[in-house]
Image 1: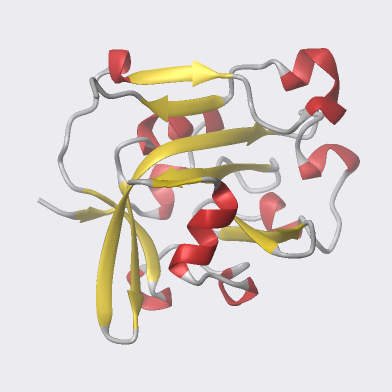
Image 2 (image 1 turned 30 degrees about the horizontal axis):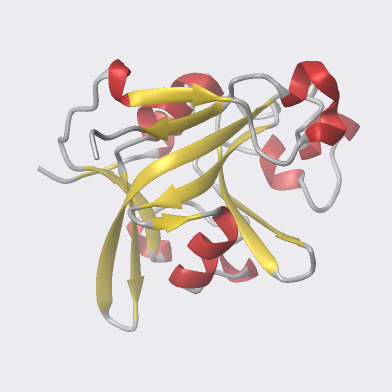
Length: 175
């Protein structure tokens, strides 16, 4: 049974949403075709004190969407060539988001956006069928033992405490 995840799902504590998002599906409609990709890895950025988060220095034009309502996409460019896809979580005014790091056999957030051909056009848009990019729960049960918590990637600049927080959630399989 397919169920579109609404903003209500994302309006929870960021770490709770991050763990629940693993095993769900990111669905895109492009050129009349719908494709679904299982989410296998995410990374959480939680609040204004999280030194690895763009929100740690306050609200800016770039990160403004993180301060808005839950269930909106936050895309930004890194290294001048890779878009990063995030979904905003938690209460309005509390800046938090989850980076989509891997789908199916697509590993790496830059590869995710490149494969799905995502650009700034999705930034500040809600995750809904109407916008053409949304999340679904397809009824597959994921056990806590199937999710490994790891430190985030590429955030050494945040210092030893914040860079080592286990805010990355990865689906582990028996393969």
